[in-house]
Amino acid sequence: MALQTKGDTAWFGWPKDDKLEELRAQWIKAATADERKKLAEAIQQRAFEVVPYVPTGQWTAMTAYHKNVKGIINAPAFLMWNVEKT
Image (cartoon, rainbow, N blue to C red; front, top):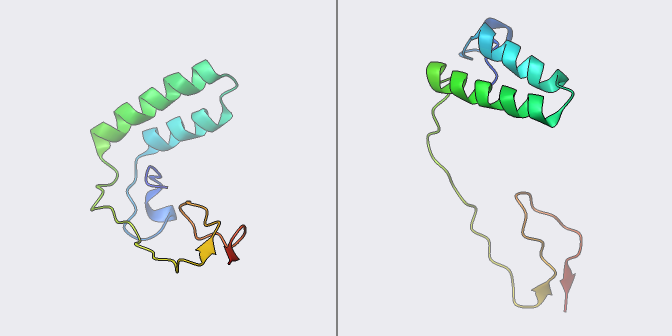
């Protein structure tokens, strides 16, 4: 998402860069892994040139579980399966 540069056709304030959008479209349509690798390098180079976003930070949600809960899956989303109470 952060490398989308559709400008006015996207959400307000979104950056616009037609060259980066064209590279992204080519990457999606690429038939081989080698083509995708070359296009990924070109996308990264272009992103460093136009700087479509600046990360403002990272965060980690701190979670505590009662000692009788087990089977928690460590994942980016909270998953309820595999959990059991003993």
